[in-house]
Image 1 (cartoon, rainbow, N blue to C red):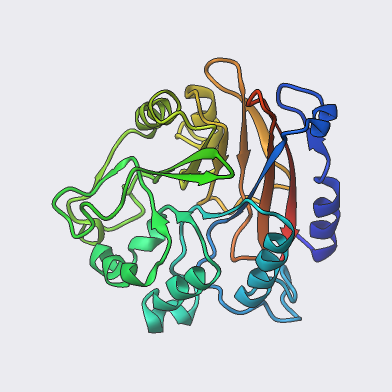
Image 2: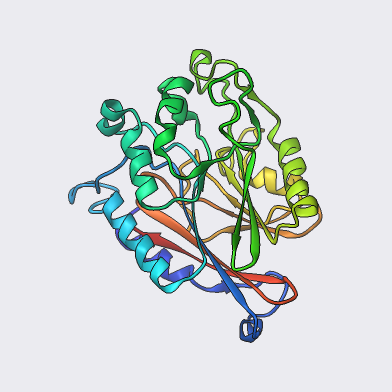
Length: 301
């Protein structure tokens, strides 16, 4: 995909899409805005691509992303910064530093929450654990059971963040290790059914924790031709999830896909390509009745 196409999509996807009430509700006196920025599958790409790169000329790079994040934070009070996994593996920076640089830079950018992708196990679960103290942000994974591993008690199924009185529940889902990760790398970690876990976790966040917005950080993949669980299938088979931010399939979307969930309510599914050349932005607006609408755009880094 060429740079011009990225810019066109960025402009075209800024239109508002209503979820339950008209955009005239933006005039509501007590309207609250939540800005969600998200990345996925950055794969240790620290520097921007070269000017002569055939797909991503002069795109990406941590410095540019950090500048964009700071610019958005300067004009928006309530910002969440999230990542959907595969932080590791892809450039010599990972081979040399083992993931330390990635975590340090994400901490500098003040990421809030991330989940684990299959490549985050490429140095083994012990390699991930070694770098974990360098991450000032939280990792969440609801369908990886880390009992009897070095990550037991260190990775929570979900995290609740409060912004301007709004409770946001963020939970993680990881892909099946089979065929992707060597057993010796994940050791005793158990993969649990993501649909069942997602329904249980989202229900707890909604009914018990009383969250105003529920976000799933997924590394399942956007969609597949074969009969395999994906973000789109997850959306249709679950309820109580408002937003699925995906990874793994390196899918470039100019705006979130709207999917009807098990109860017939709309779920937003989004993914921001790969290698840090894009960053997704979804803005949620809440009125005093807790009804929501959203706007979205894809940001070229």
